[in-house]
Amino acid sequence: MSWSEQVEQWLGPSVPGPVDRLSVRPGEVTARVGGFEVSLIRAVPDDALWDRVCEALASQEVFRARVLAGELPVPVGRVCTMFGVDLVPRGWDALVATCSCDRWDGVCAHLRAAAAALAAQADRDPFTLTRWAGMDRGALRTRVMAAGRIKGPSVPEETARDNASEAIIEDVTDPSDHAPDSAAAFWSAPSPPGPVDIPSGSGDRIRAAAPGALADELPPFPRPGT
Image (tube, rainbow, N blue to C red; front, top):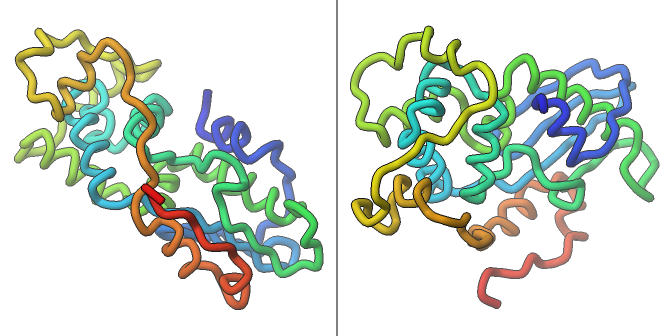
């Protein structure tokens, strides 16, 4: 499955449209579609979640090599999801989506066209999605290097090309040799971890990022543990 197919899976069928401009920054995608201004706002995972993701990627040679070679295959996205970071938000309900057109009864064609443009850009540069989630290419590479205690350049490009297809999780040694909270212990666990709690303050970030008077109309977001 490609990155564009991932976007279509969660944000529905795309509607091609005249997208004049597409801009991606942490937490927000903006676009001008058919003369209308479109905004797609998402919650940005906190540093603690990104640290867990980078430790997991650094602990596996296949993933580490791909990221350090400047590549982001779709299986990396699945690793991110395991640790609570969805590179593609899970549906329109996970977004604050606005358009300057007069259709407020659902997801308009301009929003879907912006999503289609984002999907196409993700195929060209998958790090577009990490940037939207708050971590650009350089920062992700640096964190993976730090988590893997790598001081020099990344693994040779030949390694990345050899693993161009579906990534395979490596076998690990006896789980008892690893600290319970380490990434290596996760890979050797017999079953995946339970759902990750919503990061504290995610709702406040969405409300703060919502443009104009829309923020005043948003209901309060429940805080974890309440």
